[in-house]
Amino acid sequence: KITDTSKDINSNSLTNIKNYKDIKGDENTSSNENNKGLSSFFKAEKVKGYLVSLWFIVVMILSFVTLIKYRRFIKKINKEEVIGEKSLRLESVFIRAKEIIEPKKKVRLKLTKLVSSPMLIGFIKPIILIPKDLMENLSEKEIEFILMHELSHLKRKDIIIVWLFKIVEILNFYNPLINISGRVMKEDCEEAC
Image (cartoon, rainbow, N blue to C red):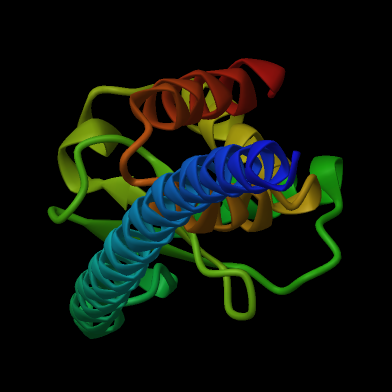
């Protein structure tokens, strides 16, 4: 009976050792899978870091280019002369339009060849830009409507909305839907006048 017992112990020991190896093998396999998961996680994190860095660089470049272009345009506009005594007709129409719209800020009017359609620029020191060529073909009433339209943009603070949306466009440069919605928003601002 002793030998039978020793056989049982030996067979139980062998079974236990085999089971132990199976368990250890499973642990090694799962630890290898965990290591693979961790390494792919760190690779993904590295890629995310590169993408965020690339996004930041593009945003900075777009911001810089936008501000430089705007600053250059403002410098060119500031060289243009303000409407004054040279065009009493236009000045009187401008005064009538300001009386009707009643803007809260002082606004200047400039004739320029730098733009192809009337526009308002600047929020701190707003300027209405009128193309020189346009003035020759319009009646006083048409000019008055154009000026009232641009003064309405100033009164409703559309220029702030346009700049805020420009920031959104820069931050989301990779999203074409933002660019499309920007165009729609600008059209809506024009139609609202």
